Length: 282
Image (cartoon, rainbow, N blue to C red; front, side, top):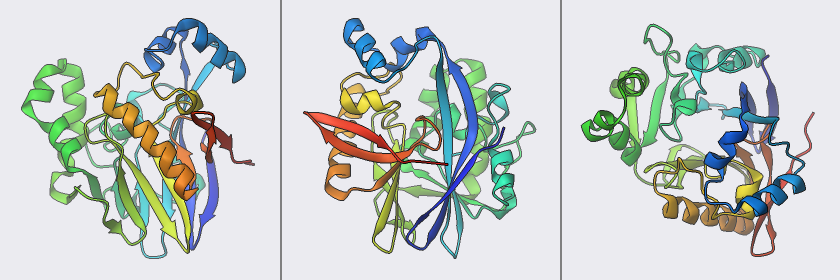
């Protein structure tokens, strides 16, 4: 089922667009919070009213209509997911958009649930009229012979299928300069080597698409509880602290990719770390 949530940031029309949800198995807890003491994690789950046997994993992308361009951030799992994912193009249609309407696709990082919707089953670009942007170090990491040769054949083929067709229309980012007016990268490396958040600014209002800097509100409260799939764990912890401090200093609205749809809220100071205040949504 497609889901959209339109909202405004200054003059920019924004739409949270769902690629769907999946069931997170109990054993996945050890991956998402791999360094958490078991008793403390159990208490945190109780505090958040999370049933470890019924955990939903959300995948929420973002559209920004600046008035000049239509920008999409991340593309979900595509057809490589489950029956309840790969819904991004349906969600776009619910917002009155087709893939051909997208002028720019920004990629936060190279994990499969963010790049899987870049191409169709035949390897053709879904967003056929778009330009693409990704952090330079992230592109170099995922397309390097060293990285690809370390993967199993299926995963390497997936990465090649979805990333290599972008080469002729790709902008490599290496700074926080605007990619289009009002939209820029915020380096939040560590989850992957070139993982970024993205800042959207208009008329003094700011939205930060935090991508996978945090995977759960619990990561704000316990930023050292690292997912096992953080590429550079200490750097990812530092990025969680960086996001928390940025939020306190600037008070942006946050869109967190894996939080409950639409993933919108504010990060607030809570003790020595941070907490999550979800935005009321329809």
